[in-house]
Length: 162
View 1 (cartoon, rainbow, N blue to C red):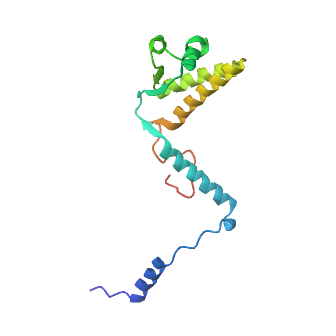
View 2 (view 1 turned 30 degrees about the vertical axis):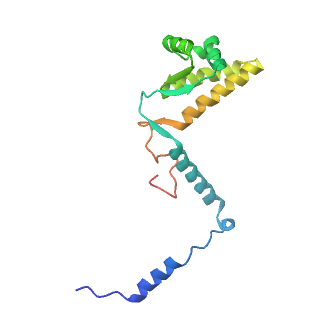
View 3 (view 1 turned 120 degrees about the vertical axis):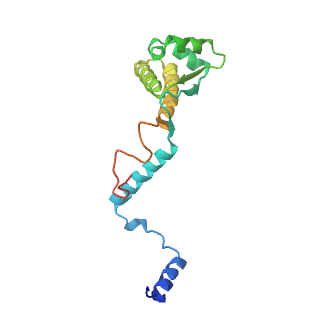
């Protein structure tokens, strides 16, 4: 038969639960630990905001008329799309692009190339907006087979299994 544990142990643990935790004094936390905590927080936030899509899934981006005209009329930007995609874009009443993540990455490079070589201020501004929209798509989506949730290039000492 098992002996009974002392009642003082249960009273101490109950007393601990009743006390509110003291607020953390950030001035006493070392800078290295603050930096590691921020890295871990950024990693968790990135994983939470990132949508996993199956390989081959097409992601839609609605376009304004001027963006469609930029894609159709600028040779370098249009090179990132197939003839079929260009024809669909030209015929569409409401212009949009539906591409896979790999196709978005390639198209992103074509837009960046044209953006870097652009001399016209208005065209540069419009290409920059298109570039930012594509960057947002690439930052918000990831292929489900490329990275497991919680995996990160930096192994955190706070969460070694992360």
